View 1 (tube, one colour):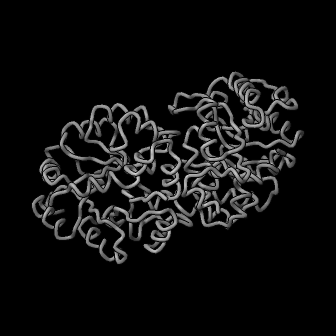
View 2 (tube, rainbow over the protein chains, first blue to last red):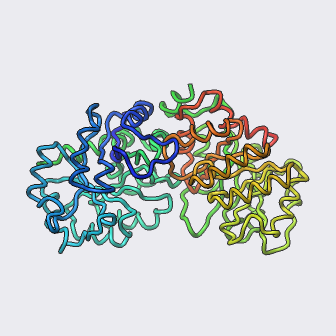
View 3 (tube, each protein chain N blue to C red):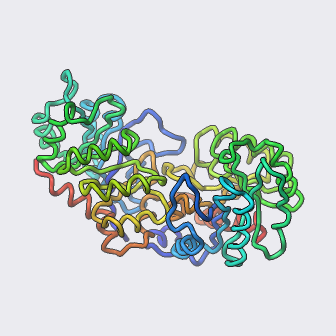
Length: 247
Length: 258
């Protein structure tokens, strides 16, 4: 059975909890057990929806099992809204946080260098992967961001089954882009990605609790790629990225 | 157990699996990989899908006649494996009865009023509904939105011999789900399919708990979406083995008279 590490999970009570969807950490753990997910990189819903500082600190409470690898939602420090970059890195080290995520649309900030440059440079120096949500930026904005920070490792989540003609040219041009799989749902998209860009840039993710983990796992289990490629996508790539972080 | 076979990546070749909601060919709004018959059947083989029911993308968002003829052709080329839905249009006079010849592999009617910038209740579709009623055919509706599920339910009420499949509506937003549940409670000729792009874990369990497994059919929407994801979501869900078997194919066998 394929071992999975989920690279895209959210924990905590959220604003919209659809009928029948997982509501608690126990629900998430049961689903993880059901499809062979050992651990999940997870951020807190409160950090996305309300307050990044407080929400990030709430992660510990949800992680008694130790199966969640903490990820923080980050933003540029404007008017003491967040930590200064050096303080952030130090706090991440203190809390064993090895990846971050932007919700720049929700928090209404720019990722342009004049606003977020210092922050992104500090994260890049430590090889901390930055997770992006496709709902928060356009394809052209993504391209510009990747070109502006060529040494930064960006992981794109929440893509779409319609994205081939927009995503492929960016992947071709920008080797610093990695893609998470939960919504990469186009027919035979996984083998096409591996063929065109290599399995090393594809990270298994579930998108839980808003996307189905069993669907995401099945997409990889049944993909027409080699066993070696499956191992990389299912867990090898995310573990490698996180192991290379230097805090 | 089905779940063990899926976790091992094995095809479900020991049960009957019928994908009741699929497409064929190309369209301009979504670039699709491997959307020809060989590409689709290769994925079916990987999963153990025995039969697949397709409508042409061009039938619903291009030249309906050209698309219907394409489906007729592919169903004839893959007898017993690929079955076809033909689509009417509210904008031209049409006669779909010519497609329903014995052995043609054309098994039903597909309505995608949204892509035709119309509504299910448009009188331009009535001839298709009457034909379905007369021949006891399935009509697969694109019923993503609440209004679509409501209007498709009205078709079920009026054309009682037709078998109404509400595409997507058991998996989408709550308004469509509630309309689909109400419809299933009121009319025995309504069914719901599992086709969806990305939905949350628990969606299948929830809809089965509301209407029962007898009213749910497996549909993947391939090649818009990879059929692997919906297939695995059903097989790894928490519903019973018996219910999974019904949804994977036994219900479709009855609806399509296979």
